[in-house]
Structures are given as structure tokens and as C-alpha cells.
Length: 481
Image 1 (cartoon, rainbow, N blue to C red):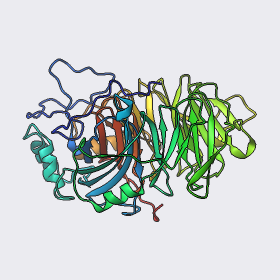
Image 2: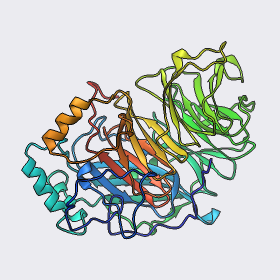
Image 3: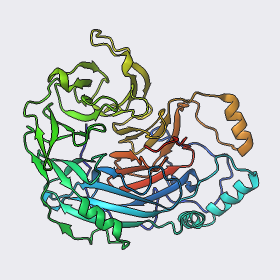
């Protein structure tokens, strides 16, 4: 798996938001054609046009050096938030040219504005006027700004950033669910560190002053804990959602170590690793329902299910893909479902109830998609919809899928009639494909926001995107979780 960001360069501030695509001042005279990434080619002089009406919210920002990994930091602003503007907190680790230039960014993005759009316009004329407005200026952001002012004020988010020095690139970073100010980072120097960022998060919560991307000072802070027992660097790391402070980490030498919290803000790391993979452990996920069970995936093409009570070997191991298994995600709303993404561009969904430790045949596969043609770099189930997941790929696409959908020709015809849509959609597009987001280069990781239904954040070599597609309609649970 190609993990590093290609030719890392410090991002420069752009005047345009979203995916940076330019818009045309003329309305197409021909029926709209769906452009398929990886299938259709752009002719000379052609440019892709971003349609802001496809999003309830779309913003782009950067913190300087590109980040291979980040995490959403849970906050106390509300368990389920739907009203604009939004405020969100993150931690991210940089990939700088010089190892000594790296840092962990703790940042707050406030005034994330947007507008909830209707999927089917009430009047065709209203849709026509919107199109006129969107094409009246070469910078579509000005139109989006005026619309966003209806719900959430100015469309310009406010970024507040604090940096903590980190020796070497940050391969992956995760915030603890129960105590979000506690974060774990994997360094390319081969060690895992635990950090307490409470002072930085408190300072951000009290401040309203925007800082320049490269202008904030770098704090020298000692980690709470530093583990150097791995034999090589790694990428796999996950906090337990059930046991506060329990952590598991995997390295490129196929070893996995279990961390148990002790009193006094320290950890006991089992020196004897879990072994069973024959190549690098790429990703790891705790079970959402079992305290001692976790899953891992590897360059060896296998997924392993482990039970820490049963010893250091996997309870079940099976061939999941024909290439490296880069990422996996355990569904927290439907705990029998496990998703995995491969270096060959495919991703799969498995029902863990159909796995058998005594059978060599894998009967658990319930869905397999080969839409992407380049390595899958991130995959994550929605925290609000059990059948929905998001996928990012090296083909510079972020796709959103709803596995509950099936092709319905009558429903499609009714929708086209209501919208007077003249789009000739390709017949070979999977009916489960809900949305395709583009515009970022070298996509590396994505996360849903657990407290803001429909919000996805992604990182790439050219910075971060916050997006809320207009066709992602979440059914809110009756109680926040």
C-alpha cells in the first residue's frame, strides 16, 4: 500500500472553497452528461465544474503541511446537531519535508455554514432560477455565500490552530472516545505516544480569534506515555469504544500489542505481541459490542478476528482480498457487519455471523464493489445510518454508499419527471452509489462526525474538506449516543 503523501508541500491559501473547480458563465445547451472518473477523459480546454447545490455545506481549509491522518474530537456542544453554523474540533498529524518540522495540530473550525436543500424542487421555475444564479458569476462561491447567509451567517469558516511539536511524520492519530483530550499517535520513527491535549482544547474553546495557517507558535510538550516496543513503524491503532483507555496497535512487522490503562495516567503494554499475520498490519478495529475482541487487516490479504482472552493467535483468519487489505471498519450500529478496502480498488462487506473457524471457505461475503480502480485509502460506516458508508481512494474520489438501495426504474422515472431532469446517467453505475465527491488530490483519510449527522471530513495532500451532501438524509435516533 502506498501510504506516504506524494511530494509533500506546504499548502498555500486559495481564494476558492470546495473542490477548487471553476464554473462556467454559460448554461449548457445540451442535456447534462454524468462524467465518470476513470472512464471519461477531459478534452483539451475542458474543466470539471463543481455544483454547490449538490451540498448542504462544502468548505476547504489547511493547516500548513499535509496530514496523512486526523481524527474528529468529540465535544460538549450537543450530541446531535443539525442547525448551521457548526463548530468542530480535530487533531491531525503532519507529513513535513523535514522530520523536525512535524507537529500535531489541535484545531477548531467554527462558523461552518450551509443550507439544507430540498432534493426535489417544489417548482421547476425555482430550479431554473437557481441555475441562472449559479452561473451568473465565474466564482460560484459568491452565490453559495449568499444562500448560506440564510442559515449560518458568512460562508467563511474560522480556523483556530495550536501546534505541538512531534519528531517525525505522524502515520496515524486517534482521539479516545470517552476522553477526547487524550490522543494516541503512531510515528514513522517507530514509537507510539499518548498525549493530553486538554489545555489546548480548553484554550480553543475560549478563543474566537482566527490564526494564520503557518503563524501559530509550536508548543514543546512531553507525551504522557511513549512506547518503543514495536519492532518497526506502523499505522494500525484504535481505542476501545467500550473500555476506557484500552488501546491496540499494530506495526509493519506483523505484530500487535495490547495496551491496558493503569492509575496515574500510564499504561501497561503487553510485551508479548499478538501474531498471526505474515505481513504488515495495516488497520485495526475494536468490536463495538465485545470488550476483548478486535479485528485486523494486513498486506497478506487476510482479515483476522482476535479474542484477547484466548491467547496471542487469531480466533479466525480468512483471505479477504486478492491484494493488500489497507483499511477496515466495524459497523457500530449493525455489529455483525465488517467493511474492508483493498489495494486493488475493491471493497467488501461481510456478515460476521457467517464466519466459521472450522471452514476454509469464506461464506461471509455479502457485497463486493469494484467501482474504484485505485487503492482504497479509507473506509468508515456512518454513525447514524447502519447501511451507509463512505470510501476514499487514490483515484481522488470520495464516494458514499447506501447498501440498502436497489434499482427502481419507476422511482427514477418519477424523480426525473418532477425535476424535469435531462441527465443520461450511465447504466453501469451501482444503484448503491449515493454520492461522488472530487476535487482533492491524493485522498488519505475520512471520518464522519458522530455529533453532526451527514457531515464528512476528509484529508488529502492539498488540505481538508468538510462536506455535507444534500442527498444524505439521516434518520436521527430518538436518543443521542
